[in-house]
Length: 317
Image 1 (spheres, rainbow, N blue to C red):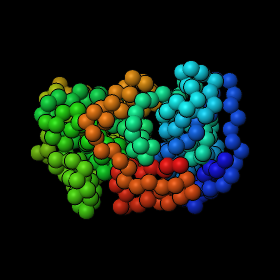
Image 2: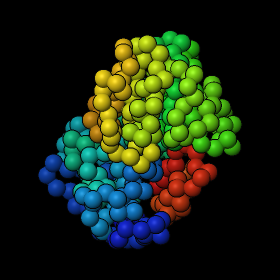
Image 3: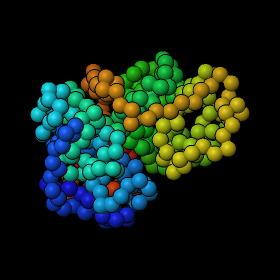
Protein backbone atom coordinates (compact mmCIF):
# COMPACT_ATOMS: atom_id res chain seq x y z
CA UNK A 1 0.00 0.00 0.00
CA UNK A 2 1.02 3.65 -0.25
CA UNK A 3 1.75 5.55 2.93
CA UNK A 4 3.53 8.65 4.22
CA UNK A 5 6.38 7.72 6.57
CA UNK A 6 8.58 9.79 8.88
CA UNK A 7 11.97 8.13 9.37
CA UNK A 8 13.53 10.88 11.49
CA UNK A 9 12.34 14.17 13.02
CA UNK A 10 12.33 17.22 10.78
CA UNK A 11 10.32 19.66 8.71
CA UNK A 12 7.62 18.79 6.18
CA UNK A 13 10.30 17.24 3.95
CA UNK A 14 10.63 14.48 6.56
CA UNK A 15 7.29 13.15 5.29
CA UNK A 16 8.08 10.53 2.63
CA UNK A 17 5.40 9.18 0.30
CA UNK A 18 6.31 5.56 -0.47
CA UNK A 19 5.13 1.94 -0.66
CA UNK A 20 5.05 -0.12 2.53
CA UNK A 21 3.66 -3.50 3.53
CA UNK A 22 -0.08 -3.56 4.13
CA UNK A 23 -0.88 -4.36 7.80
CA UNK A 24 -1.95 -7.91 8.67
CA UNK A 25 -5.05 -8.38 10.82
CA UNK A 26 -4.47 -9.81 14.30
CA UNK A 27 -6.84 -10.81 17.13
CA UNK A 28 -8.69 -7.85 18.63
CA UNK A 29 -7.81 -5.55 15.71
CA UNK A 30 -9.49 -4.73 12.39
CA UNK A 31 -8.22 -3.32 9.12
CA UNK A 32 -9.73 -0.03 7.95
CA UNK A 33 -9.66 1.20 4.37
CA UNK A 34 -8.76 4.86 4.74
CA UNK A 35 -11.05 7.27 2.91
CA UNK A 36 -9.81 10.44 4.55
CA UNK A 37 -8.29 12.13 7.56
CA UNK A 38 -7.62 15.60 8.94
CA UNK A 39 -4.24 17.23 9.57
CA UNK A 40 -3.70 18.06 13.25
CA UNK A 41 -1.25 20.28 15.14
CA UNK A 42 -0.21 17.35 17.33
CA UNK A 43 1.05 15.58 14.19
CA UNK A 44 3.24 18.60 13.48
CA UNK A 45 4.75 18.31 16.98
CA UNK A 46 5.33 14.57 16.50
CA UNK A 47 6.96 15.06 13.09
CA UNK A 48 9.29 17.59 14.69
CA UNK A 49 10.35 15.05 17.30
CA UNK A 50 8.52 16.78 20.18
CA UNK A 51 6.55 13.70 21.24
CA UNK A 52 9.05 11.86 23.46
CA UNK A 53 7.14 8.54 23.46
CA UNK A 54 7.04 8.31 19.64
CA UNK A 55 9.79 6.33 17.94
CA UNK A 56 10.67 6.51 14.25
CA UNK A 57 10.09 5.31 11.59
CA UNK A 58 6.39 5.99 12.04
CA UNK A 59 3.30 6.52 9.90
CA UNK A 60 1.60 9.54 11.48
CA UNK A 61 -2.12 10.30 11.66
CA UNK A 62 -4.28 10.37 14.80
CA UNK A 63 -7.68 10.22 13.08
CA UNK A 64 -9.37 8.47 10.20
CA UNK A 65 -12.68 8.03 8.41
CA UNK A 66 -13.18 4.99 6.25
CA UNK A 67 -14.69 1.56 5.89
CA UNK A 68 -14.01 -1.79 7.54
CA UNK A 69 -11.90 -3.88 5.16
CA UNK A 70 -11.23 -6.91 7.39
CA UNK A 71 -12.86 -7.43 10.77
CA UNK A 72 -12.32 -9.49 13.91
CA UNK A 73 -15.41 -7.98 15.56
CA UNK A 74 -18.23 -8.97 13.21
CA UNK A 75 -21.13 -8.06 13.29
CA UNK A 76 -20.32 -4.83 15.17
CA UNK A 77 -17.63 -4.02 12.62
CA UNK A 78 -18.97 -5.71 9.51
CA UNK A 79 -16.99 -5.37 6.29
CA UNK A 80 -18.07 -2.18 4.54
CA UNK A 81 -19.32 -0.48 7.73
CA UNK A 82 -18.58 3.26 7.76
CA UNK A 83 -16.37 4.11 10.75
CA UNK A 84 -14.36 6.80 12.50
CA UNK A 85 -11.39 6.51 14.78
CA UNK A 86 -9.18 9.04 16.53
CA UNK A 87 -6.73 9.45 19.37
CA UNK A 88 -5.65 6.37 21.34
CA UNK A 89 -2.11 5.55 20.24
CA UNK A 90 -2.83 5.68 16.50
CA UNK A 91 0.06 7.36 14.71
CA UNK A 92 2.12 7.23 17.90
CA UNK A 93 2.67 3.74 19.34
CA UNK A 94 1.54 2.11 16.08
CA UNK A 95 0.99 3.14 12.46
CA UNK A 96 -1.53 5.89 11.83
CA UNK A 97 -3.86 7.04 9.10
CA UNK A 98 -1.38 8.60 6.65
CA UNK A 99 -1.85 5.47 4.53
CA UNK A 100 -4.29 3.58 2.33
CA UNK A 101 -5.04 1.15 5.18
CA UNK A 102 -4.68 1.36 8.95
CA UNK A 103 -4.85 -1.47 11.52
CA UNK A 104 -6.69 -0.43 14.68
CA UNK A 105 -7.82 -1.95 17.99
CA UNK A 106 -11.51 -2.86 17.80
CA UNK A 107 -12.38 -0.79 20.88
CA UNK A 108 -11.01 2.29 19.13
CA UNK A 109 -13.20 1.93 16.03
CA UNK A 110 -16.56 3.73 16.11
CA UNK A 111 -19.35 2.78 13.67
CA UNK A 112 -21.24 5.82 12.40
CA UNK A 113 -24.29 6.54 10.27
CA UNK A 114 -24.09 9.59 8.02
CA UNK A 115 -24.63 10.77 4.46
CA UNK A 116 -21.82 13.33 4.57
CA UNK A 117 -19.17 13.21 1.85
CA UNK A 118 -15.76 11.72 2.71
CA UNK A 119 -14.18 15.19 2.56
CA UNK A 120 -16.73 16.68 4.96
CA UNK A 121 -16.58 13.63 7.23
CA UNK A 122 -12.77 13.79 7.29
CA UNK A 123 -12.98 17.30 8.75
CA UNK A 124 -14.93 16.10 11.77
CA UNK A 125 -13.34 13.36 13.94
CA UNK A 126 -10.76 14.93 16.26
CA UNK A 127 -11.70 18.53 15.47
CA UNK A 128 -15.48 18.14 15.59
CA UNK A 129 -15.55 15.86 18.62
CA UNK A 130 -13.23 18.18 20.56
CA UNK A 131 -15.29 21.27 19.69
CA UNK A 132 -18.62 19.60 20.42
CA UNK A 133 -17.46 17.96 23.64
CA UNK A 134 -16.00 21.21 24.93
CA UNK A 135 -19.20 23.10 24.12
CA UNK A 136 -21.25 20.49 25.99
CA UNK A 137 -18.96 21.00 28.99
CA UNK A 138 -19.54 24.75 28.83
CA UNK A 139 -23.29 24.11 29.34
CA UNK A 140 -24.30 26.70 26.78
CA UNK A 141 -27.58 28.52 27.34
CA UNK A 142 -29.67 30.86 25.24
CA UNK A 143 -28.13 34.30 24.74
CA UNK A 144 -24.77 33.28 26.22
CA UNK A 145 -21.78 35.43 25.33
CA UNK A 146 -19.17 32.89 24.16
CA UNK A 147 -15.50 33.70 23.57
CA UNK A 148 -13.31 31.36 21.54
CA UNK A 149 -9.59 32.03 22.04
CA UNK A 150 -7.67 30.60 19.09
CA UNK A 151 -10.67 31.15 16.87
CA UNK A 152 -9.00 30.62 13.49
CA UNK A 153 -7.88 27.07 14.31
CA UNK A 154 -9.86 24.13 12.96
CA UNK A 155 -11.43 23.52 16.38
CA UNK A 156 -12.13 27.24 16.80
CA UNK A 157 -13.97 27.61 13.51
CA UNK A 158 -15.89 24.39 14.07
CA UNK A 159 -16.87 25.43 17.61
CA UNK A 160 -18.27 28.74 16.38
CA UNK A 161 -20.49 27.00 13.84
CA UNK A 162 -21.63 24.31 16.28
CA UNK A 163 -22.46 26.89 18.96
CA UNK A 164 -24.87 28.62 16.60
CA UNK A 165 -26.33 25.24 15.62
CA UNK A 166 -26.95 24.44 19.29
CA UNK A 167 -28.70 27.80 19.83
CA UNK A 168 -28.75 30.66 17.28
CA UNK A 169 -29.10 33.23 20.07
CA UNK A 170 -25.58 32.53 21.37
CA UNK A 171 -23.24 35.42 20.57
CA UNK A 172 -19.82 34.16 19.47
CA UNK A 173 -16.66 36.26 19.74
CA UNK A 174 -13.45 34.77 18.36
CA UNK A 175 -9.87 35.96 18.69
CA UNK A 176 -7.25 36.15 15.98
CA UNK A 177 -3.74 37.58 15.91
CA UNK A 178 -4.14 38.72 12.31
CA UNK A 179 -6.51 41.48 11.24
CA UNK A 180 -6.60 39.96 7.75
CA UNK A 181 -8.41 36.89 9.12
CA UNK A 182 -11.27 38.91 10.60
CA UNK A 183 -13.31 38.68 7.41
CA UNK A 184 -12.79 34.91 7.28
CA UNK A 185 -14.11 34.54 10.83
CA UNK A 186 -17.11 36.74 10.04
CA UNK A 187 -17.82 34.66 6.94
CA UNK A 188 -17.69 31.54 9.13
CA UNK A 189 -20.50 32.99 11.24
CA UNK A 190 -18.60 34.61 14.10
CA UNK A 191 -20.57 37.56 15.51
CA UNK A 192 -17.60 39.60 16.72
CA UNK A 193 -13.84 39.42 16.17
CA UNK A 194 -11.34 40.37 18.86
CA UNK A 195 -7.81 41.07 17.65
CA UNK A 196 -5.28 39.46 19.95
CA UNK A 197 -3.47 36.23 20.59
CA UNK A 198 -1.70 35.26 23.78
CA UNK A 199 -1.78 38.78 25.25
CA UNK A 200 -4.26 39.59 28.02
CA UNK A 201 -7.79 40.46 26.95
CA UNK A 202 -9.05 44.06 27.30
CA UNK A 203 -10.01 44.72 30.93
CA UNK A 204 -13.63 45.50 30.09
CA UNK A 205 -14.19 42.26 28.10
CA UNK A 206 -16.72 39.98 29.82
CA UNK A 207 -18.17 36.64 28.73
CA UNK A 208 -20.44 33.91 30.06
CA UNK A 209 -18.39 31.10 28.59
CA UNK A 210 -14.82 30.87 27.24
CA UNK A 211 -13.44 28.08 25.07
CA UNK A 212 -9.71 28.61 25.52
CA UNK A 213 -7.86 26.72 22.78
CA UNK A 214 -4.58 28.51 23.48
CA UNK A 215 -4.63 26.70 26.80
CA UNK A 216 -2.46 27.00 29.91
CA UNK A 217 -0.70 30.06 28.53
CA UNK A 218 -3.88 32.17 28.66
CA UNK A 219 -6.33 30.34 30.91
CA UNK A 220 -5.58 32.44 34.01
CA UNK A 221 -6.40 35.58 32.05
CA UNK A 222 -9.56 34.00 30.59
CA UNK A 223 -10.85 33.28 34.08
CA UNK A 224 -10.65 36.98 34.95
CA UNK A 225 -13.10 37.86 32.17
CA UNK A 226 -16.05 35.70 33.25
CA UNK A 227 -19.44 36.94 34.27
CA UNK A 228 -20.86 35.44 37.47
CA UNK A 229 -21.56 31.75 36.95
CA UNK A 230 -19.25 31.67 33.94
CA UNK A 231 -17.15 28.73 32.77
CA UNK A 232 -13.75 28.47 31.09
CA UNK A 233 -12.91 25.29 29.19
CA UNK A 234 -9.16 24.94 28.71
CA UNK A 235 -9.22 22.59 25.74
CA UNK A 236 -6.12 22.76 23.55
CA UNK A 237 -2.54 23.90 23.82
CA UNK A 238 -2.05 26.16 20.82
CA UNK A 239 0.09 28.43 22.99
CA UNK A 240 2.74 25.72 23.20
CA UNK A 241 2.53 25.57 27.01
CA UNK A 242 1.48 22.24 28.49
CA UNK A 243 1.09 23.02 32.21
CA UNK A 244 -0.39 25.71 34.42
CA UNK A 245 2.40 27.35 36.42
CA UNK A 246 1.99 29.31 39.66
CA UNK A 247 -1.70 28.46 39.69
CA UNK A 248 -3.39 28.92 43.05
CA UNK A 249 -7.10 28.08 42.55
CA UNK A 250 -8.57 30.29 45.28
CA UNK A 251 -7.10 33.47 43.82
CA UNK A 252 -7.06 32.37 40.17
CA UNK A 253 -10.70 31.28 39.89
CA UNK A 254 -13.18 34.11 40.66
CA UNK A 255 -16.07 33.38 43.04
CA UNK A 256 -18.96 31.52 41.42
CA UNK A 257 -16.91 30.76 38.29
CA UNK A 258 -15.68 27.45 37.00
CA UNK A 259 -12.74 25.87 35.17
CA UNK A 260 -13.13 22.67 33.16
CA UNK A 261 -11.59 20.90 30.17
CA UNK A 262 -12.36 18.26 27.56
CA UNK A 263 -10.24 15.27 26.54
CA UNK A 264 -11.08 13.90 23.12
CA UNK A 265 -9.35 10.59 23.85
CA UNK A 266 -12.36 9.57 25.94
CA UNK A 267 -14.75 8.82 23.08
CA UNK A 268 -18.43 8.03 23.56
CA UNK A 269 -20.03 6.65 20.42
CA UNK A 270 -23.44 8.13 21.27
CA UNK A 271 -21.93 11.63 21.61
CA UNK A 272 -20.11 11.21 18.31
CA UNK A 273 -23.32 10.15 16.57
CA UNK A 274 -25.21 13.04 18.22
CA UNK A 275 -22.63 15.40 16.71
CA UNK A 276 -23.15 13.94 13.23
CA UNK A 277 -26.92 14.13 13.67
CA UNK A 278 -26.68 17.81 14.72
CA UNK A 279 -24.52 18.63 11.71
CA UNK A 280 -26.98 17.04 9.30
CA UNK A 281 -30.16 18.28 10.99
CA UNK A 282 -28.96 21.90 11.20
CA UNK A 283 -27.07 21.79 7.87
CA UNK A 284 -23.86 22.91 9.57
CA UNK A 285 -21.23 23.70 6.94
CA UNK A 286 -18.05 22.04 8.20
CA UNK A 287 -16.54 21.57 4.76
CA UNK A 288 -12.73 21.60 4.99
CA UNK A 289 -10.78 24.69 4.02
CA UNK A 290 -8.61 22.64 1.65
CA UNK A 291 -8.44 19.03 0.45
CA UNK A 292 -5.13 17.30 -0.31
CA UNK A 293 -4.15 13.91 -1.71
CA UNK A 294 -2.08 11.35 0.21
CA UNK A 295 0.93 12.13 -1.96
CA UNK A 296 0.76 15.83 -0.98
CA UNK A 297 0.55 15.48 2.82
CA UNK A 298 3.83 17.46 3.11
CA UNK A 299 2.11 20.39 1.39
CA UNK A 300 -0.70 20.21 3.95
CA UNK A 301 1.87 20.33 6.77
CA UNK A 302 3.46 23.42 5.25
CA UNK A 303 0.03 25.02 4.94
CA UNK A 304 -1.00 24.40 8.55
CA UNK A 305 2.31 25.79 9.79
CA UNK A 306 1.96 28.93 7.68
CA UNK A 307 0.58 32.28 8.75
CA UNK A 308 -2.32 32.07 6.32
CA UNK A 309 -3.78 28.76 7.52
CA UNK A 310 -7.50 28.94 8.34
CA UNK A 311 -9.90 26.17 9.20
CA UNK A 312 -9.50 22.42 8.73
CA UNK A 313 -7.17 20.78 6.20
CA UNK A 314 -7.99 17.24 5.14
CA UNK A 315 -6.66 14.46 2.95
CA UNK A 316 -9.03 12.33 0.87
CA UNK A 317 -8.00 9.04 -0.70
